[in-house]
Length: 108
Image 1 (cartoon, rainbow, N blue to C red):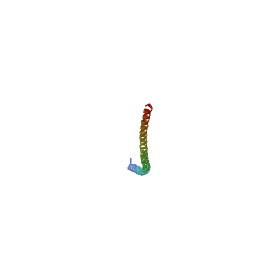
Image 2 (image 1 turned 45 degrees about the vertical axis):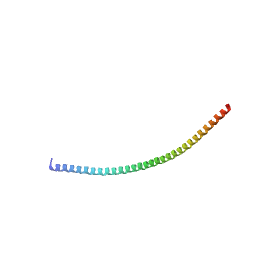
Image 3 (image 1 turned 180 degrees about the vertical axis):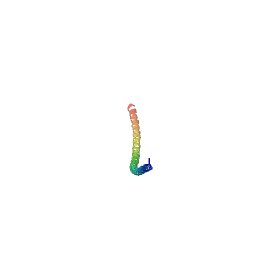
Image 4 (image 1 turned 120 degrees about the horizontal axis):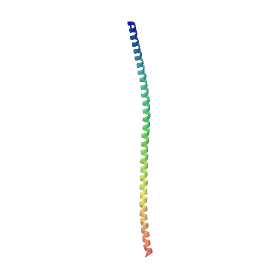
């Protein structure tokens, strides 16, 4: 192999290497662009998820307030019914005593 052929071979290797380096730079540039785009999409999705989570938290809070209101109403109704039952029981007891007295009078 002549010196000229060796020089041509080295020049071809250098050109190939330069072309490879150029392609690698282009690839890295494209990759950065894809990463940037992916980051933007991820940020958008996280924002949507965060907004949805905020809505769910608000709904849960509203439900808790609603349940507390219902619980309070149930307590009031229960207390009222308990008082009514107590009064009814006392009235029933008095009626029973009167019936017993009347039965005793009727038997005597």
